[in-house]
Length: 283
Ligand code: PAF
Image (cartoon, rainbow, N blue to C red; front, side):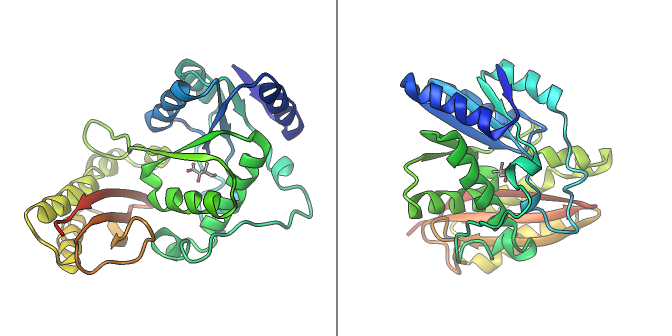
């Protein structure tokens, strides 16, 4: 496995791969890898000749009061995990390489980035789409892999790729969970032992919502209330949002008739966790 830490070196390598007729997949990450990331690697391994993983904690997608500085980083550990899962190249550029002085170009998908997570994290998705567009330009992948845990991000990146005719296939892979149901996330490392013990209740609340839908409940307000009631009893939990939306356009739904994304963001102590589930209501 190669570790490449400058854009010119990555571009040279990509030129060589393309000349050799090799297909490339890209797995954009911010590192501190877990099984969720590694499941993307294993999927990518089956579909392309070369698997590139970017590891870049992107300052542009963090708000001024967010956790950019303290976001967990451990490149040596990541290198070991990535190599054993089958990554061929880690691309690990510096912030000054990605955003040199005077950097002034942004990519924004209008209309999808200001609800759900975007409502409480203004500018977040503009930062995500800008960095992902740059990574796509540098690595020129045939396929890029993202996780369903960041459901809104996945929808926005798909839209950007379509709107800008990027010609990259976007594959969204299922959420990987801990045995107790907690969605895997690098931010789980922030949880204290007590918070970690309580965190699986988020997924339980989503399962409860799913059970309600399965039993015929169609009223989104009632389902959201039942979900929130389960979250409110978690010690030190603060709900950012629980929302039911159309997974194609993130528009809020009132009545569950087709595929519905139930998404939540909840602070447990100081840690903001997100999770979601797709349910299918009867027509
Ligand atoms: O999902 C993430 O880890 C990040 O938002 C991404 C896609 C790597 C962009 O920085």
